[in-house]
Image 1 (cartoon, one colour):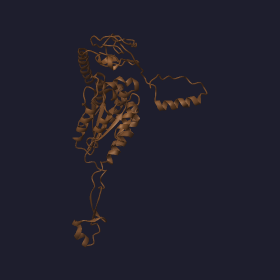
Image 2 (tube, rainbow, N blue to C red):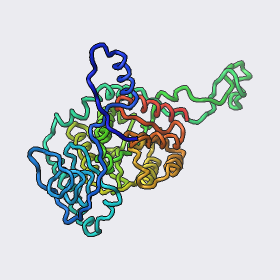
Image 3 (cartoon, rainbow, N blue to C red):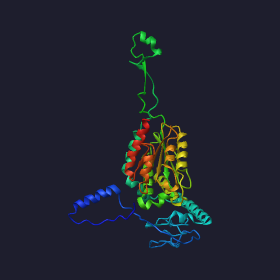
Image 4 (spheres, helix red, strand yellow):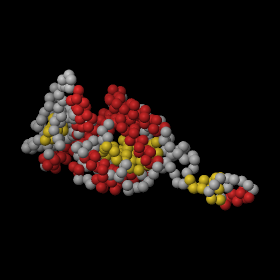
Length: 399
């Protein structure tokens, strides 16, 4: 269901109402920071453009003049049609229907897409050339500092994946070891062998674990960030991973690969060259944000999963883990959850997990129930991530 959340001041003595209110907030979360209102435009598109900048940032609904408006046409904004790219000015979003958006003529869509690609390329150049912005980077890490420490401790304590059972020799019981017959005749007691795990297993890792983080940088991550901060949370999670795994390359190597409606495989971090300072890590986060803002609509989740699993399976590693992040916006693109489930289990040498960090209604929970047991999680809180990662690493250790 949908509706408007409202808050009323409580009078002194309303303790029971306050308790009920706190209980309700704990179940449904905080009210959305951005409301979405459906509307019809009824106007034709012309030529895509950025639009004028309103110095007062006044909300603009409909029309084709202002940048950052909603439910309009031609300009950069949200919820409209025919514009070149998304632009969130922080206002409530008046949303046109998919039918109206899809009715935009092909030539206008082509012009809008080309303009968006030029703007994206320019933004990437700005990111590479800009000075390090400590305040901007801190906006991603300040809320996960404690989780970064937890991840560092988790990485330091990782053990080797449980290997195959082998013959343990020089035992005092078990099967007689044919190679120890002579010693047995002379009274030696350690002449038996038995199947088991070598004692050193789980202590020394001869190969690092390989972690493929498949991040959702589709347009819906930017579009609905004002609703539930899903893109902000994902960027915080990647900041946590990059900070938390810094210096643990001998134990964990990781890739960060993005997917969107435009591309199923976008390399943000290569396992051989993890960002080793804050400026480089900030560039990764800014590039993820930019792709979500400027990419074309669509979904490549299944293709992205297939490529990530193939990529992980080719690595020489103690363990191969793929963790895919998603905002569960699959129903819109007619993606069958069973297809996701079968893809996740296609390669027994690769452990695949899904973490849903956004949802419209209960779509994420519906997907979780269809996917393989213990392989998917729904979380709207970055503070839960170290615990989830601990569960993931533990589950792969005992497979």
